[in-house]
Image 1 (cartoon, helix red, strand yellow):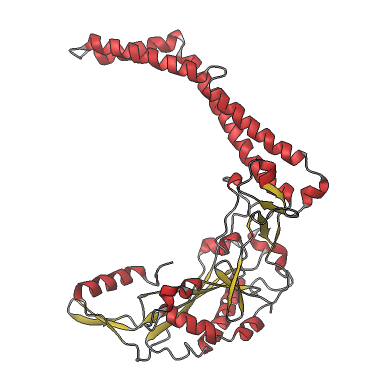
Image 2 (cartoon, rainbow, N blue to C red):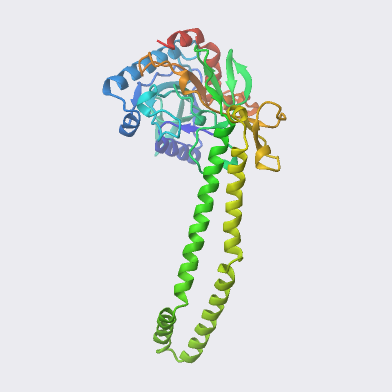
Amino acid sequence: MGLRSRTGILAICVLASAIASAQVRYRPTEPGPWRPWTFTAIPSARQSRSATNAEVRAYQARLQELAAIVKRASAVAQPLGFAAELWGNLDGYGPPAPGQPPGKAVPLAGSLSFGAFPLIEFMRNGRLMNEDMKGGETQLLQFTVNRIDMGMYGASKPMEWGQQDVEGFFEPKSGEPASGLPRVDDVFVVKKNPKPLWVPVPLAEALKPVIDERRAAFVNRRDVYAKQVAEFKEWQTPAKRAERRADWEHAAAPLPNGREFLTNAEKSDAEIEAMNRERLAPGGPEERGVKEAERELLEATGVLDALTPERRSAPSCYQSNAASLKDRFRPVAGAPAECRVLVTPNWGYFDPALPRSAPQVVMVVGYTRCLTKESLGETSRGGCVINRALIASLDWEAVRAWLDR
């Protein structure tokens, strides 16, 4: 992931000016400011979560409590060589996928973002400028609160699910912890609740999106084919032939080679008719496509219908290199190692007795880019250099104590 801009237009101007003048000066030993707190909760985010003004204010207050914990970390308490900024936002929600609760039934969610913007000076239009209090670019760090959807992990799903709206995804992989925080794909998780963040997808549920996708494909092909046949039948009627003939004659009238134009039009018309007659005939390519889509639908429904009650409810996995559908979607038990477990967010993770503004899980986002070999070689005061120091010096026990209240 690349640089993130807090104020993109200003950042572009700054960089353009810097490149033109080549007079950028970093100030790594100078104290920097803490920029003012800001919070964003756009109307659509409030509406999608049915959030009241009181709930949004309470949620912002909880994010500010987390911001206070972050600001106490020794790496950022007194910014040196960088300007520090923390800001919060409320995320939107939905529309919910099948089985996903409505926005009003889940806690408020969003992020606390942190940026360490290197202190620099540069010449622009002959004037010495800096961006200590606003603007600049840096690698951001985000503390995302109360989000457990698949988007948090950058997860993917089986290609057979197509465009179906389903919250299932491949189980995220664990990785090397950082500062004692467990890593899940590219995020680090902080939580106290022992409940899992996701639960297995039963095999019958894993097959339903396949059936829905194939049914939609079959219905579409069938209806398109029927429409094409009807249109071609009408196209061949004496009235339509006469209408086309009249159009040709009208177009040919002012032309010096009008007779040649009519001959070519008649020839093209005959070729179009022959092509469509072959394409739309019973047993032709269009009808074969419909039959193939129907066979694929019947295959999927047959696989589901053949399942025993035990296999229907069994946790499922997906093996992409298997030849048949019944071998690609199968129970986890007895499956080979390459069969990827299918899961869905565990919406039962959240405690409904807590206020909607209560933080119940935090995921640290954007930190893995600070662990690459290239990033570890950076030395400038800002971005990943400060992000790593912050993660190492942050009071994680205080963060855990902040949760579930």
